[in-house]
Length: 239
Image (cartoon, rainbow, N blue to C red; front, side, top):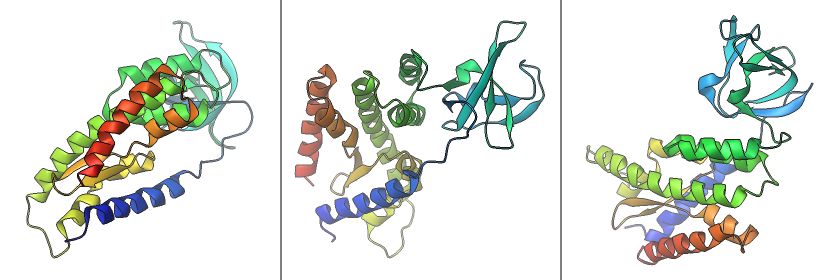
């Protein structure tokens, strides 16, 4: 049987490769103030600044845009005229995006993160950490990301175990878990998991908690992160 530590290393390599690939950010469009889509439910790009305007396209969460101007519709909705690419532009509802240069948008995004769950919370937390480098709210977001990832790990463990009840091939059992497709979208968010072969459970690898302690050691959230890591290391010692 493959040693547990080797299983951990294999998963680390998978995560590292995904991190390297997705750390290459798309170049932001020119022509205005940078903003990022955080609420895809409102991210309809329209030809005119009104909710009934012709749909140009719908933007995905994480898409960067350049804000050119602002206009309010007759029904009180604020729209931004944005560039999506050098050839694509249109109007988007203000609440769909946040801008690192706009005062208060970091707190607004934190509120949206707190209202989100599971993958949505992790994805929006990643946007925050990628774009609000100087926000004093980063420790809270790092703790939220780590806690959400550990909650997700429990769900992934259950769904993967159900899938593995099916007939497996000749490969080692643990390799089926480490190749479980449910991990993919989290790896794209640079969130990795370790796998305990004895219990057949995933655990969050703790990267956000370690970053929190390293960069903000005196923040109240850092004390909570230390508790999370102690529990994680207790799991790893049993592996």
